Image (cartoon, rainbow, N blue to C red; front, side, top):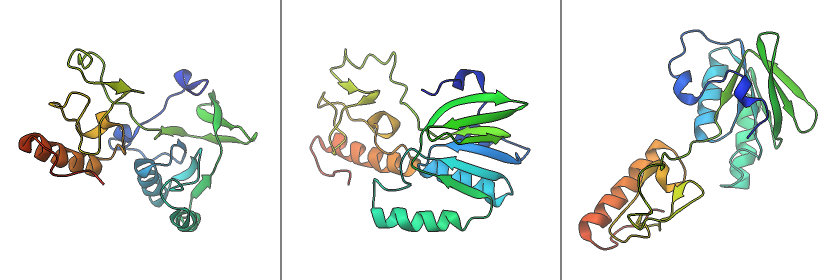
Length: 189
């Protein structure tokens, strides 16, 4: 939660796929694969992008990769990466969006892009009635994609792992093969 977010217009990755006018500037929150891809796209289209990331980009995967990604992004014209720093408030300011960071910096841009991730739509599915355990808005599962009910498998956003289409496709193949076999024949790596 970011104070002021309810009062500020923002776009998501879905919204960005439908824009017809390029904003002159944007502040983006979230540096996962989707956020990085769309920020780089906007910068290359001429939008001045300021990407705010709570942690170093790709650091959770590999420190060397994080170092290289910083160099790549630093070379992108119109692209500024601010990390690791947290946004503490967003607000409207004279027809623009202002983002205050924990270190006192204030970014003002034409728009706000939220790339902070998604939550699976689990509400109302009756998962507990089916013996399927959930935790922190995701279905608890093993690397075989089997849930706490051994007859139910999960894939995609509901698994809570990397919420990227390619990962979801892989999880779906593993879940389908294991469900069809009735046994573990494959695991997600």
